[in-house]
Length: 203
Length: 210
Image (cartoon, rainbow over all chains, first blue to last red; front, side, top):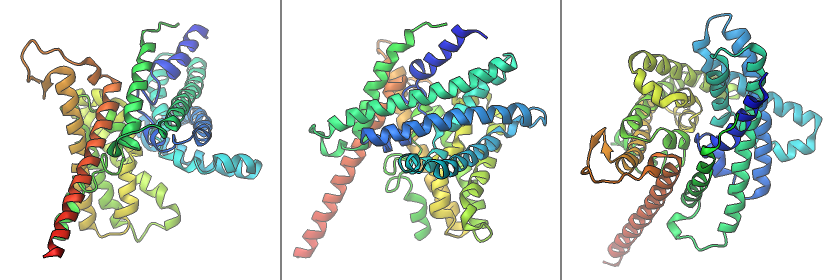
C-alpha cells in the first residue's frame, strides 16, 4: 500500500479533476438542486453515501462476477442494474432505520439512480484501478477511497454553487439569463478557479 | 403533417439541451470539436431510436411498477451495442468520447423519452420522436462544438478557418469554455423565444384589431 498514491487519488478526485467542474459529471443535480444550501447539503450527503457504496459493490461485481465469467463487456448493463438496486435498497433501509434521515435525504435518493456521476465513478474506477496491474487489495482500497473522494468533490462544488446562487438572487441578472444560463456562467468561472489546482503535483 | 411535427419539434421547440436542459453532461463534455459532437450525437440518436422502438413495442407487456428498470435494461443493451461497434470500427472516436459512451445509459433524454413518449405511443410515432430528439441533441452538440472548436482551436472539422496569425482562445477548449458557451447559448435561446413570442402576440393583436 502506498499512502502517497492514495493521497494523490483523494486530492485528484476532489480538486484536480473535480467530477462536476472538470469531468462534467452530475450536471443535472448540480443545476437542479443548487438553489439553496440546505437541499444542496442533503443532496451532497446522499451522493457521497451512494457513490462510496456503488464503488464498493461494483468492485465486487466486476472482480467476482464479470471477470470470472469473462463478460466484462457487459459491465455497463451490470453496473447500472446494481446501482439502481442499491439506491432502492438504501432508500428502504434508511426509511426503516432512521425516518428523520429519510425525510431529509429521501427525495434525493431516487434522483441519484440517473445521476451520471454515480455510474461515471464506477466506470472511471474500472479504467483506473481494475484493468491495471494493481494488486487486488490495493485496487479495492483505491476504488472505495476514490468513490468517497469523488462524492466529496461533488458536494463541495454543489455547496459552493448553492452559496453563490443565494447571493445571485439579489443581483440584477438580465431577464433571459436568469436561472439555468447564469448558473452555467458561474460554473464556468468556478471551473477557471479549479483549473488552478491542475498545477498541483501530489504523490 | 402531424408526423412532421413529431420530427421537427425536437430541433427547436423542444430542443432537449437548450429548452429542456436534459443531457447536459455529454453536451458539455464531448463538445470540444464538431467531429466529437457529431459522433456523440449519432451514438445517442441510435440508442434513442432503438430504445424508443423497443419500449413502444413492449409497452403493453411491461408492468407499470417495474417499468423504469425495464427501460434501463433496454437502453443499456443498445448502449453496449454502440460501445462495441464503436470500439471495433471507430477506435479514434471511441477514445476521444471515452467514458461518455457507457454514460449514454444515464442520459436523461433517453430515459425521459422512453417514459414520457414511447411508453404511451405506437411504434411509428415513437420512431419519429426518437429521430427528432436525436437530431435536436446532435444539433446542440454540433453548435456548441463548432463554437468551441472555432474559437479555441481556430479550426472547423479540423481545417483552419482563420489565417496563421489567429490567436486561439485556449480557454474555450478547456472545461470553463464549455460552461460559458452553454450559458450564453441558453440565454440567447431564451431571448429568441421571448422575441418570437412577442412578435406572434403583436401579429395576433394586429389581426384582432382589423
